[in-house]
Length: 194
Image (tube, rainbow, N blue to C red; front, side, top):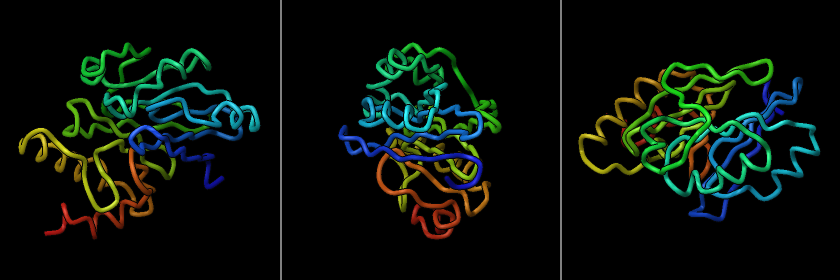
C-alpha cells in the first residue's frame, strides 16, 4: 500500500487495456476503474483483503473499457459510474451519471471527477489520493486518438487545464501501457512540449 489507498493494476487481454483497483484499507471499500473484461483474480483479491467493491468508474465508453461492466455489477453489486455522453456512445446504463467536479467518497477519502473529453465526447478522469486514472486521454509520452482536429484541441486543453494542474508526483494510470507521472508528462510528453 502506498499512502492512504491500496492500489492494484490489472493488465487485461482485451486490446492490452488496463483496469485498476483502488481501495481504502481502513474501511475496506474498493473501486474498480474500467472493465474491458472481468479482471482475472479480482474476486480472490477482494476476498483476500476483505474489500467490498462499491463502485466501478468507467473513464469512457469504448468496449475495451466497458465490456466487463455488467459482469462486475452482477457479481459484486458495484455501482457503475460514467458520463451521460459516453453512456449513449456504448449503450450501457450506469447506476449514476457523474460529471466534472463531482466527489466520489471511498472509505476515508474521496475521488474527484475531471472532464477530459476528446478521445470520446464524455471521457472522464478520476483523481484520488496520489493517483489519477485517465482512460485514453493521456498516455506515457502520448495522448489518445481523436476523430477530428477540433476534438484533439479540446483534449489537449482539458489535459492542460485539469490534469497538468495536479501535483508533479501524481501517478498517471492510463487505459493502456505503463503508468507515468504528471511531472514527467508535463515536461517530456511531445504533444505538450513547445
